[in-house]
Length: 261
Ligand SMILES: NC(=O)c1ccc[n+]([C@@H]2O[C@H](COP(=O)([O-])OP(=O)(O)OC[C@H]3O[C@@H](n4cnc5c(N)ncnc54)[C@H](O)[C@@H]3O)[C@@H](O)[C@H]2O)c1
Image (cartoon, rainbow, N blue to C red; front, side, top):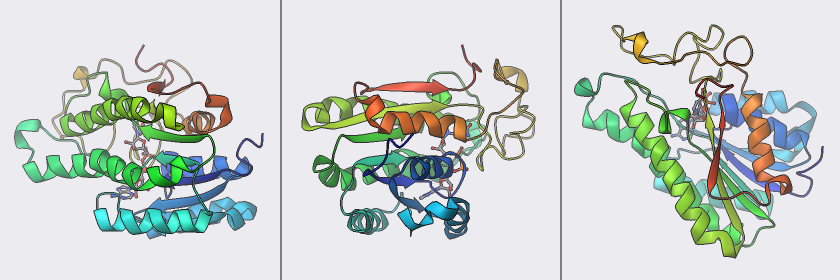
């Protein structure tokens, strides 16, 4: 498939996990990509994995939670690509704790990176997307936005916010040619879920030591043998950002192997 030939994509969180898998998928389908991430090491790993496709890959160290960094980074990406057709907002963090022991600073940090970060990148990218071809934005919600995940109140709130924001943006820009969709991953092995991916027995690192695991109604996907690889979400993101998704906007697709029916 060469759905991305002639398409220009900016992908945040491109240094690890699902964002990195999306970078590799879009490159494999012929696209030109700027991978942005706060982790320089992660971006180096992405370049290495891109192999022969690395000539269509540019990297940019960028902090989605920092307004100046996003402004400079998105402008540099648009210049490097000569425009912008696709934006994928995969950058995100997960922090778990008992809510009554969570500081305002910790709560705000999750909202700042996941929710405000998604807003900032979109705000800076929209002018270029309005001039792009068949423009599409794919945001990252989570199963936690619609199914209860204890000890993750800030994370769930940030992802619920992203989902609602995606709907609002879809309405605002539909007639101006930009589609906005979201994916809701769950049970995907990645940097975020490291240490749990292989067994599928944990919801990620950092759960309180005395976490009551019985509160997680279901832990394992019905499909397969445990957590799936990040490429299982990247393929859906690639579809949403391509012409195959041309009649999809203002909605989300859950990719969790049936962990939550
Ligand atoms: N893995 C899952 O099961 C799962 C489930 C639901 C949602 N998600 C979402 O998928 C997206 C990708 O996560 P992943 O699972 O691949 O985890 P990951 O940790 O492997 O990747 C996240 C990437 O975001 C980057 N990042 C973090 N803070 C940043 C910042 N301030 N600025 C720029 N980059 C930053 C990290 O460096 C990392 O490369 C996230 O939005 C996450 O919330 C993942």
